[in-house]
Length: 344
Ligand SMILES: *Cc1c(COP(=O)(O)O)cnc(C)c1O
Image (cartoon, rainbow, N blue to C red; front, top):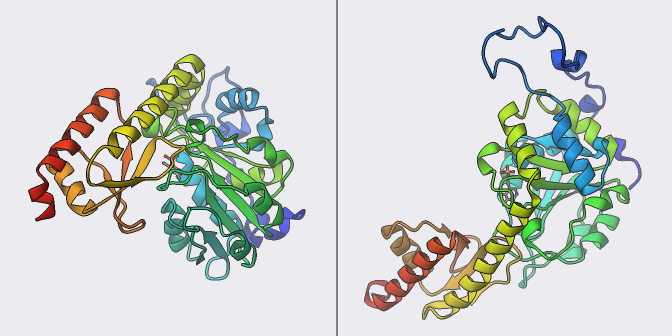
């Protein structure tokens, strides 16, 4: 896997990207009459198209170089960018391993790509042989996986042997004991690791995602991304969140503690049949009559995610505040006591 360029679409190889005003003059002092901005106001100037300050902090915290980092408008933008850089519509394929995050497939449909599905095994692990037997430009892996919650094994073996780009989605890695594979982008030229500020950093509303990869991949993704893809407010919110690591760690520790508490409490509920192992901030819970329980929870204004269509008889429950989790458990017990409603 040494020639990344051979995987890139021809029109992207030869693309001259839009050169924005802030790209052509990046100084901060002076009278700016170059970008047709309004001279009055607080948010009147375009944001830094290279998100320099944010990348600088990430670079020192994660021990990777600036040129190995791309900032996206959420990691969803990065999922799409990768397809548009590498995959020719109507010709190329991506591989997904369901049950997993739905956006890989949605973007493949939008970008008119072929979709190869290699389902996870019964214990939600990768079917390595079946994956490596396929030909595709991009393989999407998610670890810890959404909606199952578990971490995937054998990742490095697949990255090493897959003849294409491996997009490793680490949206939930900060809740897990498993190490991130960020530093492996130095070793594997075909690896893209994506992370997000939406989950562990609590900034879902800010829309900030990150891709880590070798400099060549990052430069092609940068060429294709809209110049001002992340607003100034959102860049600042991400920078601010990185300045308080103690709060970040405490917050995660609390969520993990609550997850474990929730797990034991859920097992006490009569209709709960199984809780899948989770390294994330949610639990996939198997139960009798899951559709009815899901509806009954909504009746009581507790909104969970019905995942029965992808994993039989399950709902996915995000770990909330201690108070919210207590209310959830109280309500589930109530539903169990009113069994007649459910088992009618
Ligand atoms: C929530 C989630 C994301 C986050 O996407 P953003 O666009 O960064 O908010 C990415 N991947 C997975 C698997 C997720 O569950």
